[in-house]
Amino acid sequence: MIGNTKNYDDIIGLTNHRSKKHPPQPMTSRAAQFSPFKALTGYEDSTDEAARLVDEKVELTEEENEKIRRRLTSLREEEAGHPLVTLSCFVPDLFKEGGSYTVVSGTLKKVDDLERALTFTDGRTVRFENIIGFPED
Image (tube, rainbow, N blue to C red; front, side, top):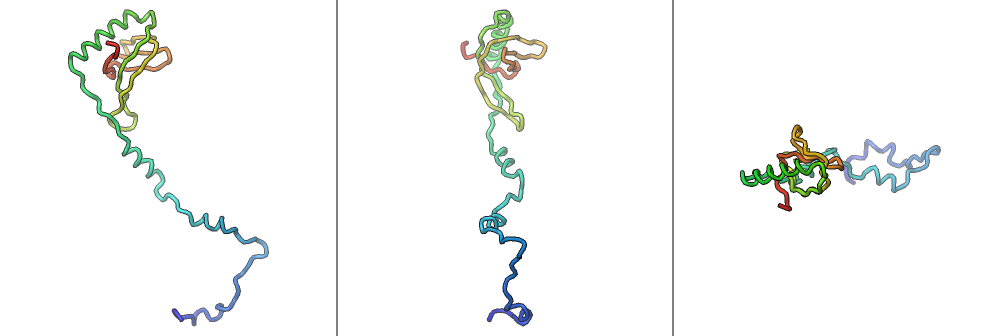
């Protein structure tokens, strides 16, 4: 016999107690109490965020900047006609250093020199410093 049963001689032969008020818990519910849990709440989200890749913002050449300035000047002149504009731009990431590149198309509402941004009729804005080019040029 394993271990010392002398301490338990008085209860070793007793039957398991069954409550008359409460029915036994179903086996499926009993198993649920032993299911794994996330001890570190938010850990998975933070590791996913750290693994998410972002692009670095490229520095444009003086020639590329001049092309953008000329195109912005022509858009100021065309602004009243609400032209359709397509541009490539850098979108800064809200949570980490860097961002992503995208192409934006829409009807121009305003060239805002005070805010240094293009505003489209659907409410989107693109800051001048985030414009990297106009594909139609």
